[in-house]
Image (cartoon, rainbow, N blue to C red; front, side, top):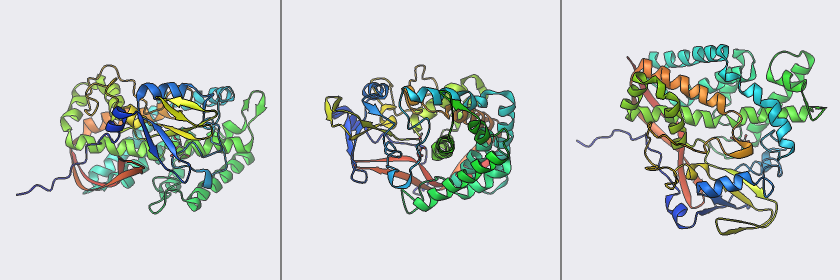
Length: 390
Ligand code: EMZ
């Protein structure tokens, strides 16, 4: 009898041929085309060169697909270049390292336990909307240091704050987020607390108080940047273990490998495919001419499979010793939320290893990004799974 078992654990490398042939891919995006840098070495060089490849272009332009049409607020520190970038980054870095604190980790553990309880109690769950999304939203209350009941509103927004099922750029949806953040900022001005809004409103960079618009810029980044990325990472992790349960058992037997295992999963999934830069002058990348005021993308997903650095790059290998993946970006703009994301994944993987015997995929709808000449599986729109307890 033909087996109709789903295959959900593989995330193919969409860029292998082009990376080997020329090292540069192309895609069109709203009449503002993008040259995609596919090799790890070229990507690192371009990421380092913030003077030639800037992030501080028109707000929204470095994101692919571009958000210029739906966003005016500059995300901070993400869309600010050095040297100004440093003052903002130094301000927010300590706050975004809080996930390492004991009390934070304990509260995160309670959220993870509750999320797994719910999945085990149900006959099956959609891992995207009923597991990863609530987990991400509840964990975000810790990052913002706001009450847990705020999470329900964010869960109701769905997996991406700027995109919806019918459209890559949903202006109405974006307005909901902007209005929400404006309101929260006004509340924090009226009665300051210990949440991120209040802390930012009371902060100075380079001797000047942050403006409301700057606070909004940090908050939009915090809401948008870590949303679909964390949801993809969590969902894909469960998809992977559903067909590689011996790897999950290994985590139970050898918990000391968890950090390495999580880095390897993040390398393999690359939850954010790419990020753009705008050339400030005519330049050359991988022997390819880039014209001033055009965009390049740093394609993290491709660089993570570059066989020059990663032997057997398409294999998930928890014993990989050297793993300089770029899933959290590279250089000045490396991911501000990385500590939080890593902490979620590490605690989640350990908890799943302790409590779950197996996962069974019942239905899957893959999220395939169309990127010009490439199509890439980045995650799932939905993934129905049965969790079985130990
Ligand atoms: C931007 C981006 C940041 C962008 C790390 O990535 O994430 C995207 O999901 C958002 O749409 O606005 O925050």
